[in-house]
Length: 592
Image (cartoon, rainbow, N blue to C red; front, side):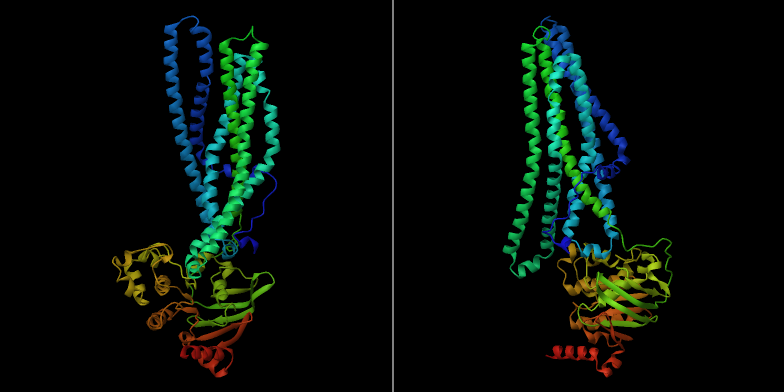
């Protein structure tokens, strides 16, 4: 699929919609008290700060010419107190804005993480993990900053404009009109550049996503990269992605930086117009203090205009990022409890596959009309060529995917009609891709059963002979494991995962290539632990070493989307069919 490639951009939505922004603002609503405090402090700071030009006008036109020294000192002291109040208000505003921003980041990430944990496997099968990570980390930071600061700041800048305009008309209505004359020019510029800016930020977010996806992929596959000496070639690919990101960034920044020259030019022209009008048109009606005050207000008037332009740029990028975030949150959870789903109580372990049809991609079925029944306590081995559907069968039983047709029943109950948690609590699942979490060995064993005691965890490890290498560690079971189990051999990871599965004490046991990375001597010992664990439990075992499944109740040979052969090891060997050929070829390879 195209979306699974790190170098393919995602489709961009053309129209600008405030719907995304409205959804984003819902994360701010719980913290409206903080924003109200921040907003109030900011308004006080703005109103007091805008009194400065009036103070300057009064000093120049009245106090200095009248040599009113005592009043000048009093005004200066009052002005100093006013500045202290402004500083305290700004500090409080910054504190509450930061608190709100971090709270919003926490809430959005928590929602994303919870939703990602519930999405079905096919979502992850079709997307690079880096493209998912960039949404949870980078995009959320940018969005939260705008929602907590940008929205408040935009309101404050608008309030500043209102107060500045009022003060300008109080000081000099004629010169105020001169200042406002530049607004139509600015409005035309914004109208023209708005759609271009939005597209540029969407392209940038795509390029950043591609770069992060490739980086994450190469960090996970660094051993393969070094083994095949691909560092130079991979570096060229990464450099190409970085070049695309830089170009997209420069195009976006070019448009952003265009806002500053326009507003600065308009500010300069308006200021020049003020002095020109004061000299040639209103020389007899405007004082020096008034001109200086209006020039100061002109600077302050275009300051909020420029800030609003910057906020607008942030709005453009924020909406682009929100689109990506909500794409994840809007992704439907396809594997979920149906309305009214029942709890699956204690089971005996009877499993029925009834005319099951399943396909990962439309038109390419992996399983075609598969039917079989497993009685409680039976051990079923699944064998066959790679890609035949062995792992698919156990994935469907665990309901990691939903069927296209047919049904799977456990103790007579359709697994699609029971809750996922109650179904999976009855199962012990050891997947082919062994994953070890960062933390201690004890916490990894206890991962699926948090109420287990230390003694039970150790007993499970001993049962599968994982205790032999764990106990030899300097800190034993509390030894910390690095990310993805770095430093552990593949066999040790599987033993640890096997202990985790055994601790769950399941009624249905699923082992997908459970001993594929364990040496032959260790495997012989583990088989004893497996034999103890299988007693009284229904089990499904996928194994590449056929010698390990000879004692299974039945063996299912999966080929061409169905069950080609079924029977015990003895029965299938006597039949001399597909299983016999596979078994004999494996013996020849091992002997050879």
